[in-house]
Length: 305
Picture: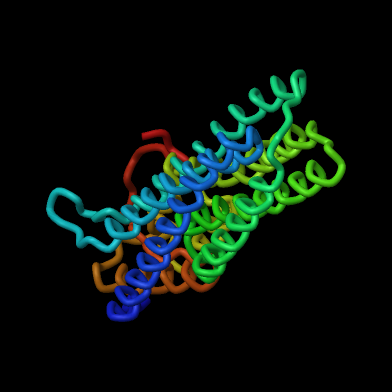
């Protein structure tokens, strides 16, 4: 199985991702500063909550940017995988901040429900429009990478929820301006927070699974073992580990008990068949096999190390 790929394309793509993230960071810093000032002047909690969310976006985008840069660094004797898991760690941190911020917003919204305040709605309207435009541009910049990379998806989700939050704040500002319905500010804050928990939890769960070396949910371990055991000369497949290094690399490790005491060249030929099977049928691109013949020990699929 060939694992060759274009390094030039990889580095160009990484630079493009980094540039888009840097632009998004700059836009979100502008939004955060203006919304904090506007929220304090207008008295709008939803605008301040949107500013707080934007501030977490700035932090998360910086984390994502650093992770993207680190992921491109070469491996070494002390870092044999390089920094390939940096982006997964960034996704986990970003998802966790989404959930934490959401809980804080819910708490503050409940307090405001009990004591609605008059709000300068025109400031809310204009700054929410700024948020929609700036976050919309950032969403477009990151959209193409959001389906390919968990780190970029976390950054994309932060920005998408910000854009939706700004739309909600705009609607609230219009309702307050024309109908003086000030409690809608707290209601919108609550809705934004609940949405943050919804999108953040899935990403938190996915990144946690990768960090904990859980087998990917779409990889049927039992089916893999059954398929490999059908190959000629293989008696038993046991001591199996399936895990992700990152979103591009899925690893398979196993001990294989052979029916006969085969030569090293025969093992190499069988190994190629296993690699082809796992790659084409299960999208596993890194295979590590320990061959055995007549060796005593546990033969279960999963053996606790």
